Image 1: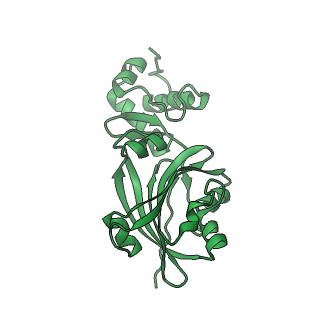
Image 2: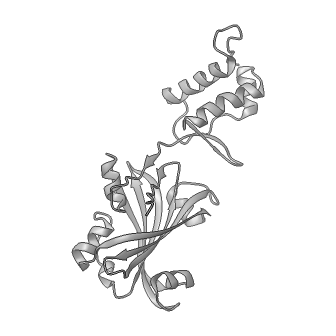
Image 3: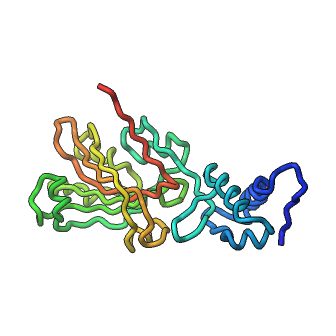
Amino acid sequence: MEKLESNAVAPLYKQLYEALLAKVKSGEYQVGDKIPSEEQLIRIYGVSRVTVRNAIKQLVDENILVKRHGKGTFVSMPAYIESMTAGGSFTESGLQMQKKPGTKVVSVEEKEATGHVAQALGIEKGQYVIAIERVRLLDGTAAIFEVDYFRNDFDFMLEVNLADESLLDTLRTHGGLIASYFDNIIEISLADEKVARYLGVEEEEPLVKINQTVIDEKNQILYFNEQYIRSEIYKVAIRSYNK
């Protein structure tokens, strides 16, 4: 048992807060680690449930810990906030945040378009599209699992190396195509087996999902993508205008 000082000036919840924070800072509890449960903390420190909950609440409010429903409380990952001036580019956003962006290409293949992909691209269901699966990383940490869908006349996308080059830059340099704006639909999605494996999360973990249609300067659809985002690591920024 790690006794706290009941006669100290600082209240017990504050002492417990400091004790847990010290364990995070020292590396005893590392990023991603699950900390002891409420019951365990009550036994370890000889305090009440109210004291434990107040200490945990302060650490969660400060984004030092994060609660995952049904799983416990974990040491939080650092959260990176997307740059408003990156023009929709993950690579540029990472560089502006002074973080090292990275991309792991999972697969590049031609496949039949499902209903929602066909609708997003303005083609018939079952037509072949080019699907590119990628994991987007910041400082080596997987933040986004992304699938980009292109019409089959974008066949040059089968040959490019998207591990080293921004997709938007690739479209500009190889196809003379420039993205003008992005239509985003945001929802919550549960990670399936593949997404969970590549993002390093549990299956059915809630993720932010963005269905994004990218439009060019001529108001034509360039491509459609699905992004599965670990929001505790990467926070999407959206700017709205009052016109």
